[in-house]
Every structure is written in C-alpha cells, then in structure tokens.
Image (tube, rainbow, N blue to C red; front, top):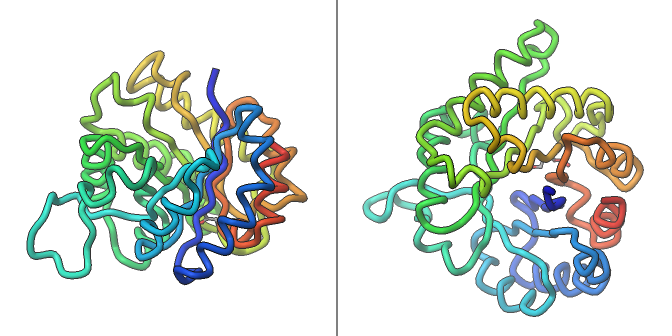
Length: 250
Ligand code: 13P
C-alpha cells in the first residue's frame, strides 16, 4: 500500500514571513487529511526552511527542499549541501525540469543528487518529464526511459522505496494545461513498468506523483488513478485553500 504524497513546490515564491503565514493557514486546513493518512509536504525556498521547520512542528506537515548540491562541502558558492538539509527536511526535489532546462542540469548530475540525498537520510523527489517538442515527436516514452534509468542508477535496492518519482510533463507546468487523468495514468504506469524492469518488485513500493497544472478542479480525477500516488503542485500550492482542496481530493 503506497501512501499518497501531496507536495507543494513553492519555487521562487514566499519570503520568510510569508512562509510563516502560509504554513499557519495551511496546517489547520489539512489536519484531518493528515490524520486519515494523506502525507502532505511543503517545499519553501531554502532561506525559509529553518523557520518553516519550527512553524510546522506538531502539524504533521512534512518539509522538503527544492534543490541540493551533491557535494558534501567546499568551494561551491551559493550552493547547499545535503548535510545542511538533513535534520531539517524529509524530502528534496531533484531534477525539476526548471533546473534541467534553465540551469542545464544533466541526467548524471541529477542522479548524483538523488544518491547524495539518500546518503544523507532524506528522500529524493526525482522529477522526470518530456518537453512539448518531445511529446509531439512521439519521444515521450524514450525520454522517460532515459531519465528514470539515469536518475535511479546506482541506488541500492533497499533504498528505492524511499525514492519518489514525479512525472511532470514540461508542457503542463505552469500552463494551466494539465495532462488528462488518463494520459497521466498511462505515463505513470509506463514509468512503473520501467522501474520494474530495472528493480523488480521495488516498483510496487515506489510512489509516482503527477505534476503540472494540478488544481482543486482536476485533482480528484488525477489522484483516483491507480498508478498515481500523489501530486507535485506548483502554483496552486501558494494558496492555502487551493492546496488544501487538492489534499482533500486525495
Ligand atoms: P504548476 O502546478 O504551477 O504547473 O507547477 C508544477 C510543478 O512544476 C511542480 O514542481
């Protein structure tokens, strides 16, 4: 049985004081859903993580970071090491398409991050997904096969159940144009089948989220699908009521 994980990726939004406000608003709205077994996480900017940790204590909310550098320490100006996050966050998003596209992160670099996050005792949320051009060229499955295999490379079999995959078709991110629930299910099932080829039964324990224009209006149908174990939510996670409505739909 896979626990549904609804995670909010706040991206480059919310100051420290706005983080306090949003978590304070959100916590009471999702308390009952957490009590019935839905896992709920928020991923504020790095600078707000320590404050967020204090504000969400006793709420049952989990905390995630949006990125990490795989190195342990050293001359990497502006970067954050896994050891700086462990003890603070449960999750770390790695390989988000914005990191891959805007900051040029490779499959190999994303894999190093996933391994470093696991080694530091946290769980990676490994993002995969095709561009619009790849989708229209019929390359979606090839892209997913490559990103999943590279992203999971070298991860010990008994660590795999801690890894969360987020299928985020890039054309659906921030566009208001979500994948249909049927398409999202098909892609997530395809990813699970790829994992099964690589790692056997671990595929049934790993959670696969859908992300890309998830809203209160489409969440219920998307989250009802058998291979979709949660959502990675961008824009709609910035409003407590909207995010709580998505959590309630899980
Ligand atoms: P939106 O929900 O704003 O489309 O963003 C999705 C996303 O990128 C989450 O990581």
